Image 1 (cartoon, helix red, strand yellow):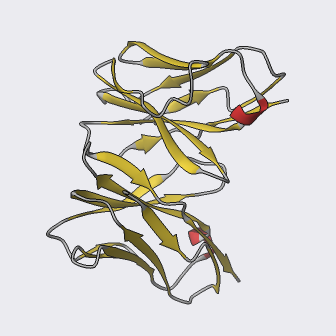
Image 2 (image 1 turned 90 degrees about the vertical axis):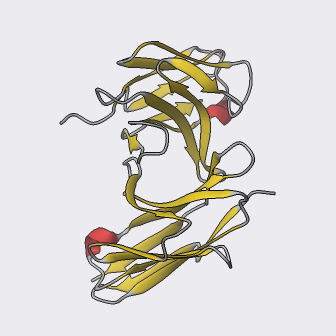
Length: 113
Length: 112
């Protein structure tokens, strides 16, 4: 079975540019989560969706960040404009029901120069 | 304040030895506690989940314990292998909004 698929695996771009991270959850999972991981702050939940609807976006750091889930098999996390402090590994995870184990993708390593 | 603290921050052990990782939390109310293993360059993978009524749960060489009274959990690894080298993250669900609160993780290195 295919797990959670994220793309790209690595992204290097200059500050001010728009960055779009993509995620394909496991088929049948109705919850989708976006996380950010840094050495300083560990794993942080940014936003999660249930049945394509954003439920809690309180972890989104600021208006430069936005996330969408247009259908059950695709989600994006967009940063516009990007800043060097956005450099981190961004993980997408999905689960069947909110209390079940989350299955994580391998992350997107983002570097903003 | 709802917090999850893990110790030690990092640990080096020799292959074949046992080790125990600690997780203390102040989350209330408590729903469950989950241990994840994260290999370098990969996403976390769930090892086990503990609910309020569970004291011990095993997954192969991994055994998790939970003391809901003292709000402590431990993850014991038996007969460590090189492949156990990873970060281990404790995550507690709870608090007023039943959120996930993450520990900073313990980085384990198993040396031959």
